[in-house]
Amino acid sequence: MRPTELPRPDAAAQAASAALVARIEAELRAQENWISFARYMELALYEPQYGYYAAAGNPLGAGGDFVTAPELSPLFARTLARQLAALLRPGDALLEFGAGSGALAAHLCDELAALGAAPHPYLILETSGVLRERQRARLGARAQWLVRMPAGFRGIMLANEVADAMPVHAIAWTRSGISERGVCAKDGRLAWCERPPAAEVLAAAQDIAIDLPPSGRYESELALAAPGWLRSLAAALERGAILVIDYGFPQREYYHPQRSMGTLMCHYRHRAHADPFFFPGLQDITAHVDFSALAQAAAQSGLDLLGYANQAQFLVNCGITDLLGAEDSGNAAQYAPLAASAQTLLSPAEMGELFKVLAVGRGIEQPLLGFTQGDRSHTL
Image (cartoon, rainbow, N blue to C red; front, side, top):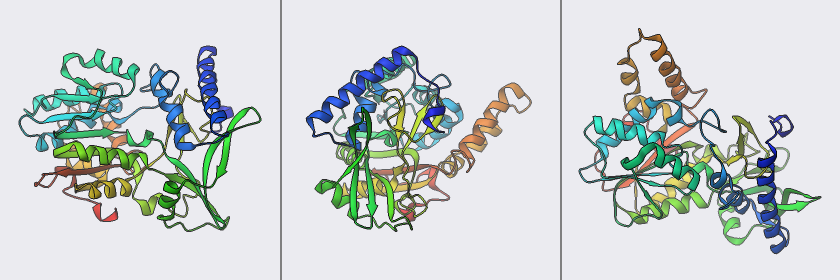
């Protein structure tokens, strides 16, 4: 969808976006009219007063900009709970990053309790104050909120649709070399501007084998924040597992010759488009996850690779079809929505193939239920 076809925000929302643009322009003036796209994405999403996740009243669900699997159906959490229950030991904690509306936490707490594997405690690390209050209202005393990573963590860390919103650098590989696509102010608007990459960015970009298309130009993203985040989790993990669920690819697919325009995508009122400068602060900005980079960061941090599969295979391995089969199919009003949501979660044309599950850990000896069949670890 082209930005000109998107619905216009109201006057108050436009004013908030304008205030964020002014904040970005002030930083541009202090930085010779150029910042990396990673810095722009950080400001657009997380600036404390006007950033999307700091100020958005309700980005999730039917009334927001996008729907995640936990809001789509309780089957997602109920199925995931089977894997978590098999991993959790007495006294283990479960730590969720970026808990959104709290839907996943609520369903997991209920299902894990029913399975006799309730974590002690259920922890949430949430950067958005708005979403944190929404989670508190939904979960009450069933969860505890953290402001920083705990040391010596034992249990499970869970990140569902978190890594895709971490800032990425925008890169252009051309016949004449590698450029970094950053942001500048041009003709009174924010715009793309290119310059030579900083040393760290250039070194990482040079490590990626790119087959240039006939045009001689290949654009994509370079994730440095997400692997750094995973390394920080590894440093805090004494024993247990880290599960990352998100849309993305292994590196060889991420930088496929046919994906020459990258994976950047924006979400606004359930419409997807590719203009990151459309009313900054009012839309989500994401990039697909490079799961090879995460797996490499885990290995460098001394973690074991426990499994990697598409979401459909993982959920089937964990018994989603059994859970659906146990529902009363004669009650059409209740069963039909569940069956439809299961189709969305599993279909290769929807979430089943694009979404992946990566598990890494320390001190985990038993094979994981979610990867008993269809493990694609060899593709990383």
